Length: 273
Image (cartoon, rainbow, N blue to C red; front, top):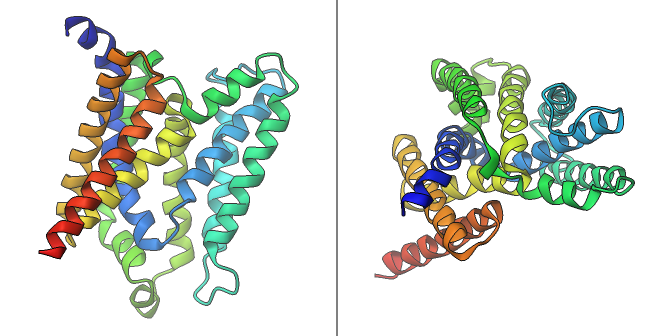
């Protein structure tokens, strides 16, 4: 057990930080009905890093972060501008197209390099075992600042996510606030993908929020439930990864899926009674 704690305490701490911000953002994403926006932005961030790699920058270096962030900001602006009051084409369809094209483009680029297969795997599930304290501190500061920003403007963000018609009637600039939402969202995703990969970031965003929504209608309770689910899934996933000698990222993703199935069954039997 001591060896497990010695190896896993930094990855687990990183997962707690990821859970803190992603569970909150996930509730907004679900309320807005754009479930795959995180997956798409995460893939765009990975594509940006891949393009930087094409220009000679290290795929996981600090300089390449700006390629990733720039691509994510472009995606954030696109998603904020494609949300309209009367949608001719559902925004989720646009998000899905962007994800598919970004993923395919990244694979095309990486396929020309000898280490391409390994980098494609890293793009999907990351390697959270290699996270260091410097990355954890940077992530905690960045996410703390973004969390404080959202807390200060929480009433506007929550109103737009849960009742955009009411926000429109009050004269709130929905597109302007959407741009702010997606830009801050982009900062989070860009940093998260470098550490955790596309699939794990998506799991941290959606699964805790969905699990929390199953059992509560109040935002505060949803947040605490989401944080609890993310914490439990991270610990169990890392425990199984260590003792069964499995890839950590993929194991945590599967653990999220298993927990959500259990929570769904519990919810079903509670309603059945």
